[in-house]
Length: 115
Image 1: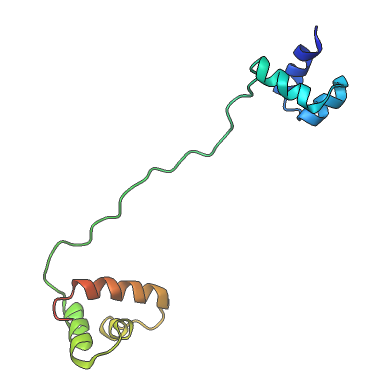
Image 2: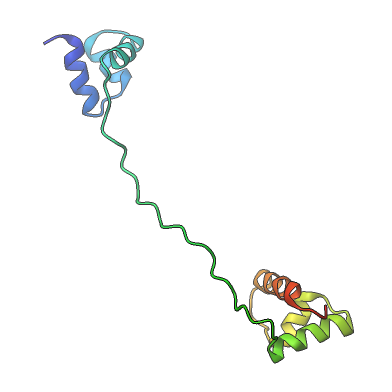
């Protein structure tokens, strides 16, 4: 068996270029050229399965506002409260994270007609 055939088996078993080169007393570039010349390819890499992509679910399509949403619009429009503060008052939120409140308030502010 020729050196390159034995080197190919080692390469397929997962040995690195450096280890193969030292085992057969050749340079690393020789091993790389054998790989390219004789078209050595290891099996496909193992990956985790990709999760299925899905679009965000649309919020309710009704244009009518709930009582809490109406209160939010009145607080923002009439008293000039910041969106997040009006959202906290209208929906009686005290322990919810501020980032979540700010994003929800912004989304509702765009929906609100009176704001």
